[in-house]
Length: 189
Picture 1 (cartoon, one colour):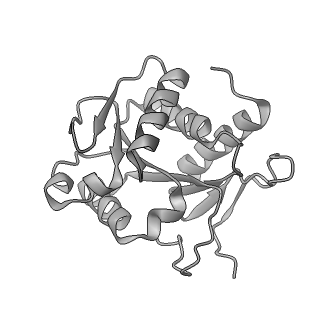
Picture 2 (cartoon, rainbow, N blue to C red):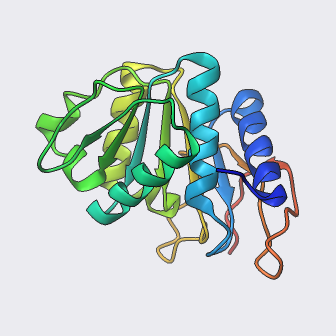
Picture 3 (cartoon, rainbow, N blue to C red):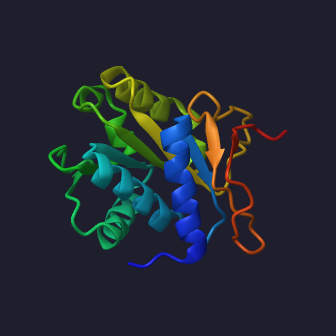
């Protein structure tokens, strides 16, 4: 699958921010192709470093959709799934549903990950997400966290700074063009 120029720019900036600054949040408006872009970012990291990754989503339908799009972008990378029916960590990239993975018995099964990707990353401050993030970091303190969202500001004012140190490749909503490359993450008030 070919990415649009603005998507390529977003991916490049995200990969660079992950390498140079650590845990990174990518912000793009609805319709910008966040699923395709997060797939490209994760695919690049996994392919270039032989990393083991997990992609989190908060609903079963999203897990299926993201896995399908990931396969279109990264046809040579193996995938598996952790959900209510199946719990397989045997592939390079595992797609997991947060409510399932956040349960104590399932948290114990998380292997050492090199990359944890969070779709709809504004949820990352929630307790269930934090249990997963904390477990991944306990297994591998060098695990990078990458998230994408259209709405980085949470209504409950719980900031994302404890998870993401950098915001990269932000796109404005009017034309979906990149407006910044890398900046320290700040919550707007």
